Image (cartoon, rainbow, N blue to C red; front, side, top):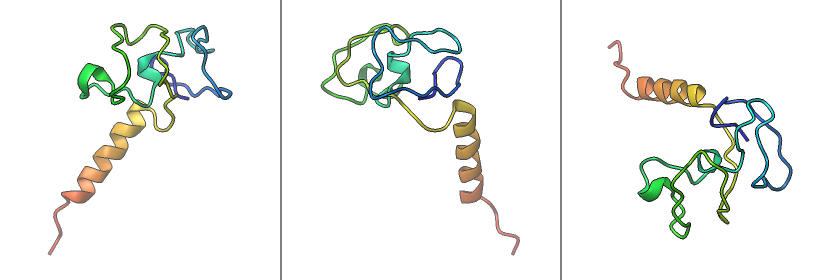
Length: 94
């Protein structure tokens, strides 16, 4: 899992419990912003339609649908998207 706050990778076991925190920055680990379903463009900022609304997305919660997000860091994702867009709209030298 990559922490939303410090963007450092952390190895977790099978589950991230409500009381767990990031070993690097000590922020809560089981929060909406660390979940694969978190999406600012979605209704209630969550793509899981059955999930209850959580007001504070940076505070530990009891959501049954929590699944740790893995993958690119924020900056890596921006660079990757930029390179894909540049390749898509690149003008040919003909």
